[in-house]
Image (cartoon, rainbow, N blue to C red; front, side, top):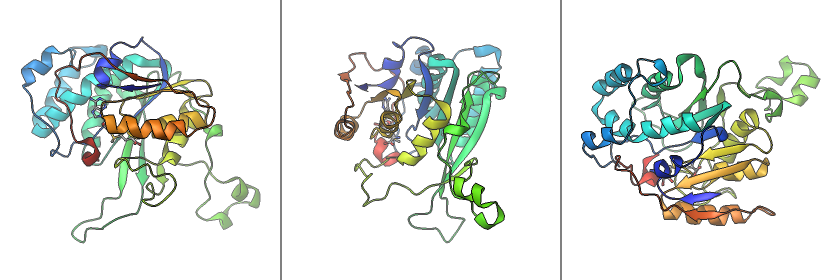
Length: 294
Ligand SMILES: C[S@@+](CC[C@H](N)C(=O)[O-])C[C@H]1O[C@@H](n2cnc3c(N)ncnc32)[C@H](O)[C@@H]1O
């Protein structure tokens, strides 16, 4: 299913523990694309919860906000959505939060407080090598994906199901091992979506299918429900359909829904329900111009 609307409004109406896997790739906090609104209004919208999960959540959040002013806007937007993500995850479920190097450190601190530090599973580095390179610093050519599980004692992770990759030095392992390939580590070298390739939808922030396939293979099984509430071009839904998972994608941008419609309807035998959400968007700051943001 694809829902056109503000994700927070939609998420609030979904039942607890409905999804095995949640992947989100929110617009990045570039500082260029946000509209500031009164923090007072925001706080009454149920964004923060004192003592949530028994952690000193408010304090940690306050410290992080105090450190970086632009961060406050961004997290006033993202935080209530992350709280919903936690609620919507099955007990064996996993959250993948895709960010960049400018946000990830704050996100780690906030998610440690929200989920619990013991629920942090990995920080994945997606490394690529494309585009202009700065000569004034090390060119930044990676994204960060934080992985949190709801229950560190009982979460689903199937490394056997993950597509293996070639060894960097196949001569150092047996022929049998070299043929089988190796299990990917937490650093994933993967090309960006090629500007002229078949995978390209034209949606500016489209992420590679290979990245999503790997995530879904490891942290969900056939038939499971997968949620992506910053759906964009529908990469998560496309990977889910290919791997026989069920999916719910949400996006507020009509252009995204148009792209998803075209992309998902191209999959043989896939029956996708497109809905428009009537739920009113809450008055949290909204990140606009997402296509430019990441
Ligand atoms: C970085 S893009 C996601 C790209 C996606 N991973 C892909 O592979 O195409 C972020 C998306 O979030 C959407 N978005 C931003 N704020 C939203 C909100 N409040 N509710 C629903 N969607 C939102 C934007 O329209 C944009 O399509």
